[in-house]
Length: 134
Image (cartoon, rainbow, N blue to C red; front, side):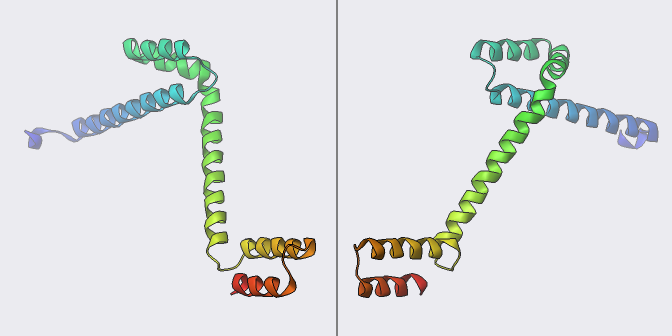
């Protein structure tokens, strides 16, 4: 069966498979954007979902025309939030490892403030400082 296919038929099949894949990815992105959108209420989300489910081509294209410009902004917000969370995680992990960095400096500053306020004496300060520095 496959041996009877000509080059043109194979190319058309590849084209249609690619278009189908792109369409499915576009519908998934629109669904994700509908659920991610914070400026729409629940009823508006349901209306958009029903519109896209029952009239998929028209629904997706109308959604892209009416709300497509905000899709990129929402994607950017999510990317920035993920980046901030990653940076906070790295900062916390690097600071608590005892391998140097701003965590040690913060601890020494806190110890100096405790010594200046009279909460700890010089001997305790030196002992705790030696523990922090290593």
